[in-house]
Image 1 (tube, helix red, strand yellow):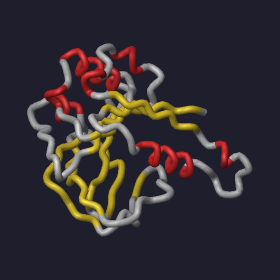
Image 2 (cartoon, one colour):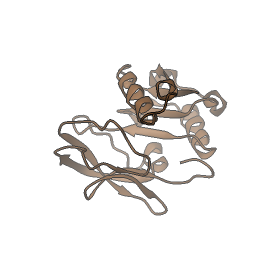
Image 3 (cartoon, one colour):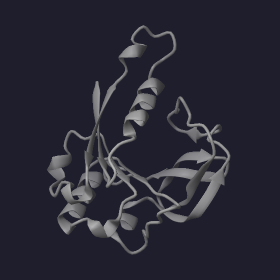
Image 4 (cartoon, one colour):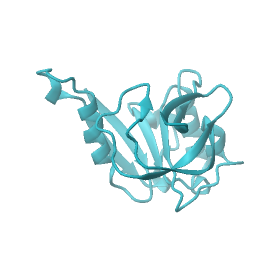
Length: 174
């Protein structure tokens, strides 16, 4: 089937590669239907154009915030995104050590199931331990945010002792 990812970013592009990798990870070796994995549709919006009603996110499988600046979102946009997550929407956030985002004391920090405490340098993601397998794994060295799961949050992905992703149930969302 088809899946829709809404990317909210100032710099559209780049997720098409992730979509290709995700489609490949869902193919089972030797399966004649392997080439018919899910199709990924990526829609890009600048923060100023993000939806202001949670219903606008219906049909969206995940929202990806790339290097978000929480202050650039209007209150109606924040309410819409928060409500969509509470109703079961999946929110992914990409941060950068080169362009730090303050999460403490704002809506995004309240919504995330973890806090960020600096960065950790990883030589690779070879041992990526994830509840759902990731194939192919990204190669090369990475500097990633050091995540600390909040109360009632679960570790969703790890590399050695470094937590790379957290999840938390919110109603039926995470």
